[in-house]
Length: 127
Image 1 (cartoon, rainbow, N blue to C red):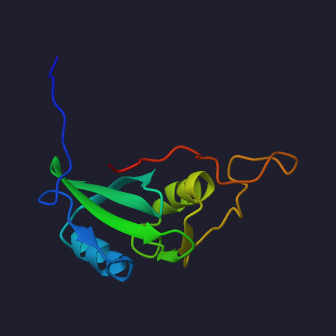
Image 2 (image 1 turned 120 degrees about the vertical axis):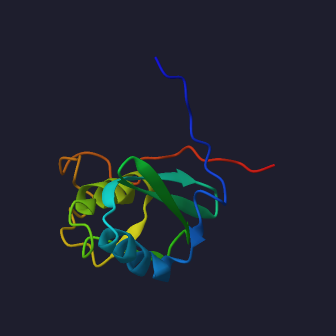
């Protein structure tokens, strides 16, 4: 069993402005990187969205801090498979993705009679 962990730092997870995410992911796709997934964390006044991509086991992470209440560009035009995780982040954290190719309108997981989103009520408090 291999015991390892990757700690994200400014060196291995550069922070981008939201309007740069499409050009960055397109560049990585052109270089042969595949989209793995996205993850996110509530930071209080913003949501940290991390993009995870790889090529030949080289992992690349991109970080975007999205102020709450602002829209984030969707990368579905670059990686169509991002549609599910972008909808999931929308439901869990309330991030609105502009240009989402298929928007489940907050119903990816929910039946109409179930409470609306966002689901995530836990955040990180910085000290």
